[in-house]
Image (cartoon, rainbow, N blue to C red; front, side, top):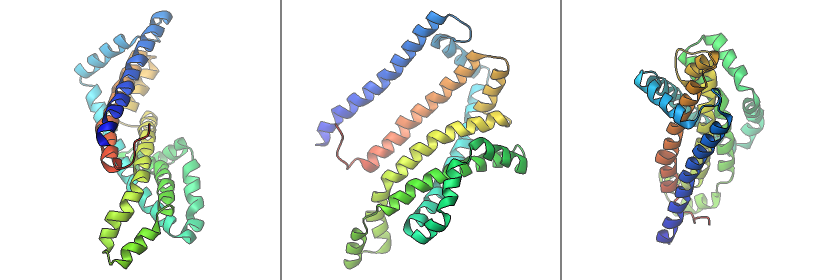
Length: 258
């Protein structure tokens, strides 16, 4: 069964990578038709990526942004999982604090960023905590639904057979919650990348967003697209190198979709 799924999975990955090449080809064709400095071709942008890396700008900025995103991601996931699990398990607490989560989901990110920058200044702490405040509610909602959908009959069965608490968590609860955790992780991470960049544009001492803000002031599309391409390359590598592998390992038992 697993062997029959492997060619399908490989074919799907092949199509996904081909779609990236197709996008680059489309970009090249449009740039040739437009022929304007504000719409550089992918070849020009890739040369700019190389030049920025050689000048020592690209990799330090990428590292700074990725470290901020990683810190915010970990804190938002931990906080969101704890809050969502508690709200999903106790309906009275969900009734009391559910609107807090709703408000957190709908407060504009720009308002949160400006507020924390005013309170704490243009600091790393202000940037990271503002991202956490924006994204933890999203994780909480996913985990709340996951806890509500738990099959408590399995827990009762485990209790009858005197399965220890930690074995019940490991064998029954965690496997049921992992799809929700992975969904929250992928969705939250995709939004955290964007929010961190916006906050860096508003005020920071470096990073991809900070550098893009400088390029914007000079209408330097080559630089903007070069940083965008480099950042997207990191995101795609993380998706295929980490998230997809983790998803396949944790959820590989589920039947493959045709």
